[in-house]
Length: 122
Length: 407
Image 1 (cartoon, rainbow over the protein chains, first blue to last red):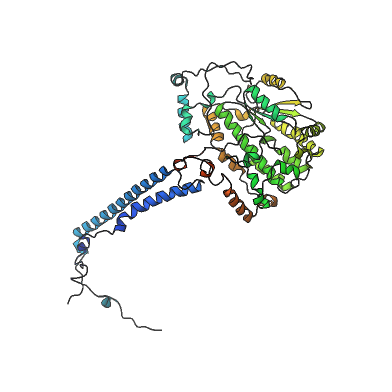
Image 2 (cartoon, each protein chain N blue to C red):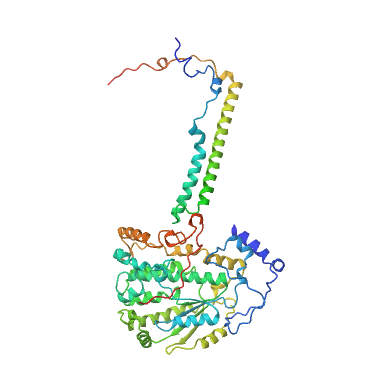
């Protein structure tokens, strides 16, 4: 019986396999950046009012403006981050395609074969 | 870098060709360099721009290009200071003078200007709730008990409030072009410190601290154009005080012959000597009072024309439009920066320090007081409206123009 081969995740046969497939992002990851940006914008405006000895919810148009700006800024940084990693993956993939000699076939080993035997001594 | 921009553009915009195109009303006239009374004034041909509302509006880099500061300055844009001993009739004379010369009269700086908040609440009424070290102490308290340890704080506060008022006076002259008549000023305040020291009301350390405050701050200001000293002999001053009959002054252990004599000595030997190098000086024997008309005639005779290499009016020697603008910006919008020159730690003097617990208690009580919770214009409890959408406050803290209260 081959354990995990059919039920668990697919084990990569070659380095290129690592770039295959698509993983659906969790909801938290999708909205993390814009939501954080919005909250920071709102809280910063409240803090500014508190420092200037004004009621925290005075000049609410500034709050709205700063929150929207925070959301857009968060979104922008999220996109920037995605682009950065996409580019990095593409470069690696391209390199693997061009240099197959750097990635020879390897034998799969268990940890018990890699690790040395341990003798407990006190 | 902003300076380069300012000078370049203002030179261009203030050049004759551009001016004639942009402001057809402004005609260069022959300027008479002397103060003229309201009665003798000939209406100028060129229309002056409206006074700049410096209390509510900032004078920013953008305004340098389109608002010419010197266009509001005329022969009456001067600072006049009325000096003299107690009960000489200074405030009455100064207000008459201001009225005749069409100038602004600023009453003598007093701590009521600080103790009454913008909503009219008197912070002195909080005294029973406060620890002893944080209670208010102004001139009436001092007259009752001149040897109190808080006389030191009182004298330093007096310097602070006079400094603040003088900045307001400069901002007024430079922003509106209207002259200002002051009843005593920050330059003569050391006379009181010396008189108090001579009577041992304040210690030597406090006096030195006072001079540290003075040295640190006073050079930022422009000295007055004209000082009028109303001279009253000490015996006559004591009589005047009795005649005026303010119970605080009459019964005060502080007001005695020695105190007044020291004051007079420092006024005449030090203050008038120093200030007359820069300002024009008029001294009158005011023991029987006098007629402001006579003084005005004398003022009109003074030639304020500045001569080359003359130390007189050196502080006001602005050659370029840019210099006028910079000075105006400094006093109208940079007041909070100038007030920071008074932030000198006094940790070495016991009577100037407040216990940390007391201060904490004081801050708590102050926050609960009417109109002190939030900045001016943001207190819903005091009836301020539209707070939800309000974003701006006054650009500067201008002192209220209130006379000293005598209970």
